[in-house]
Amino acid sequence: MLDVLYSFLALYFVDMVNMDPGGAAMAISVWTVVGLAGDFLLIPLLERVKGLDYLRVSVALELILYPAFLLVEPLWL
Image 1 (cartoon, rainbow, N blue to C red):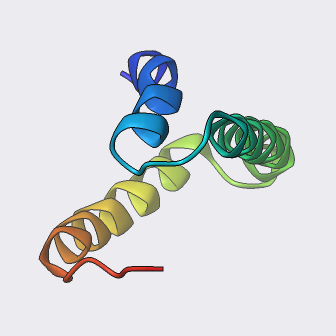
Image 2 (cartoon, helix red, strand yellow):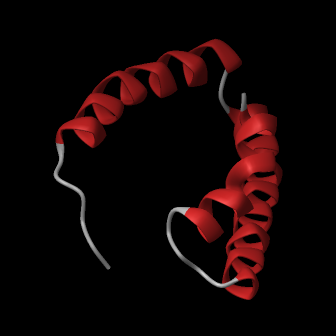
């Protein structure tokens, strides 16, 4: 699913958010760098914590945060 999101993210920023193409490219760059940093930080975390425990905690957080995200009014920057 994330590959499809990533492929249409630049189009979303240009068409829906009305960003210029340079700003959309910067947003894609930030998205990529943050994703890579998260992947590299996950490796030492999984060496210290059992994978199943990490999975349980992350699912519990998602069950709380995702509905809260959907219920919150949109914030305009």
